[in-house]
Structure formats: structure tokens, C-alpha cells
Image 1 (cartoon, rainbow, N blue to C red):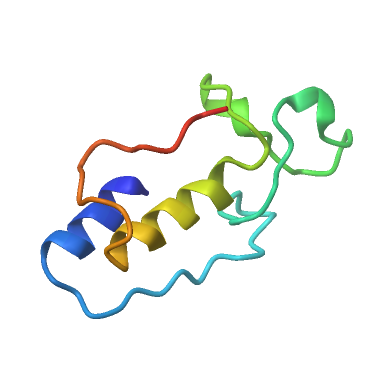
Image 2 (image 1 turned 90 degrees about the vertical axis):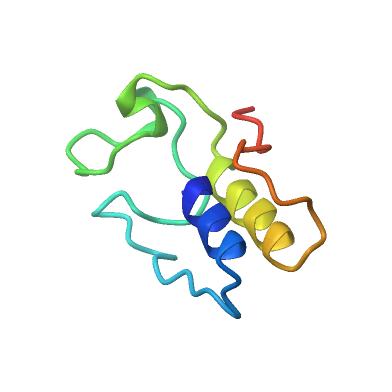
Length: 87
């Protein structure tokens, strides 16, 4: 996701749109999310953030979106390295 923010900024895009705010079933939501499978209700079909083996805070994707927006608006330097902490 950070690479997408970076590429949009680097190419001089005039706007960007984040459309996946509440896509919980698909796992593409931009909202606080369960950090581990133990926090997900059994049988819900939801996935936790550590499903790929990389643990991170429940607020990771909202924070990443905030940081990307700041870079896009010039309030954060253009960088290919994701500045958002996993915790």
C-alpha cells in the first residue's frame, strides 16, 4: 500500500481515492482490525492482521493511510520507505 502512495506522489498525480473503507469480508478494510486470530470471533470468516505472519497493531492501516495522505499533500517527505510503524 505504501508503494502505491509513493508511486502516485512520484508521478505527480493530482488526487487519489481510497475506496475500501468497510470491506471486512474481503480483508481489505481501512479500519481498526483484530491483531491476532484469537481476537476474531470463531466462525465469523474475518481475518486477523497477523494472518501473513507479520504482527502489527490494530490501528496499522488507518495509520498507514494517514501517513500516505500526509506525503501526498506534501506534509511528509517523498520516500519509498514506509515510515509507518507496525506498532
